[in-house]
Length: 524
Image 1: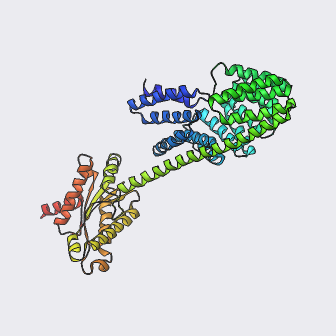
Image 2: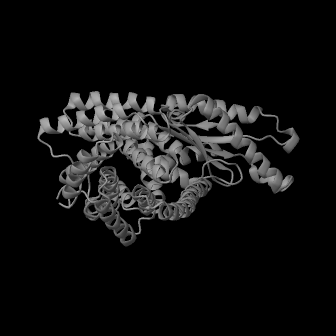
Image 3: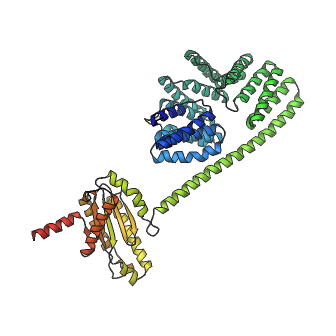
């Protein structure tokens, strides 16, 4: 498949809300491999972000946190705002899993702020919906309502199917925040919209309805709703690991409210078995809590108290395990960030001259070719200290190093003043390169003449006593080279430097000077 076809498949995955995590993980691994064969790095990184999302959904939060840095760095470096926005949304979900509501909110805000013209309609709706969820989790339901309303307006405008999910999230969060009336009203709107569009409610939506109905004391209706929820879950299209055990706990609550204690116990037994089989510690705590309530409803208060003690013990153990998991994952995130920053420091050091702090030849080799390709007004200059050996011989190499550092500072200050996009590099020994983007040859020659004067006029006596410090400079522009390449451009500048040395030193030579000299000789 070509890049366009792969991109379309990825877009469907990115803008789809309900996934089979294992299947999508396998699919996006194949897409990444195909994208790398095609040499399409953006497609490969998009596929990688989808994989990270699926791993997080499968419960491997630590791996997701470790890998997301590289996706974010690539997106930021290449200016891919849409990918950055999607990355922040996944990052928010990672922090939500870690129980860090503050960081989840910050990442959700960034995910919305980065929405630009390239954002899809789904992104505009879903990112605001998840921001609303993050505000709710952070305890700001009023802020959440404002974002739900914004997202709903967009969903109505675009005719998006995400509106049903949005209403589900809002209904559940209103219920959790204690506003039963608003929860009921929102849930009814969700039901009506799904009926109008002929869309069967997913199990998660039916579970929200059932939980609200239990909260409102509508136990018979809740039991019907939750039995339908479990039946649809059994169709196999929407089965997260903890989904069915949770639905069964809600069903047991409805059955307990009806006084159907045997049915409630059967529901709890099934939920408990699934929790133990799937290692769902958090859900198992909720099973113990409901079991205590069921024993109390039967009038078996001694067993209820014992079960409640078990619930409390399991709850404390769960809290401890969650804290440890969060600590391990945060440590992994910190170590990843620390390693990234350390690598960046090493990268920067490898491109700096240790004595002067200037850029070095490696940096020049990485950056100059792109400038040559993009900037027809580029000029460069080779700058060499005159009689530098005398400074080392008469004084010391330590004094010579101080002179080099001071010349480097003078060059940098002058270049920053006249050409902020330019830079200075030390090419070795007493030789420097000045790079002046967007500076035509006549202007560059004038700038370098000012630099030559600045070096000559500097007060050197504290270092070199009566020995002057001067520089010879060879300037070249792209107009001087028939072939635009780094070797040709630097070779031209070097030949002009040689002419400056041969002509008596402490001077600037460019093609303009050579043409002027040739014209004078012809006239004579």
